[in-house]
Image (tube, rainbow, N blue to C red; front, side, top):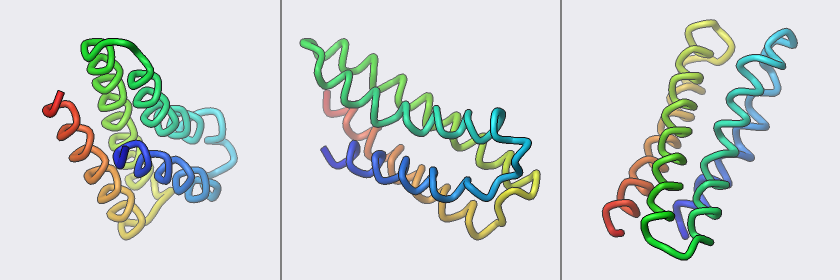
Length: 109
């Protein structure tokens, strides 16, 4: 699934990009972003492994919620000066693309 592939690549991208966050954020914003980012492809694959469309949809909605959590945390990170506006825009474009694909998949089910 394309949405899973894009979200998996996004997790790898996030892990590389947030390495530069302040050390004292390691157990705060950094961990929260990592958990939320990892949650997106994890919930897609877990939902896909379920036996019903209803269960799959439930996991896709959880993935979408995690994606929105990432969007807020990235905005907060930008406002705190941890990432610049250009990097934020790049990350936001990636989350927008994944959100579009997730919504498309949800509607198709």
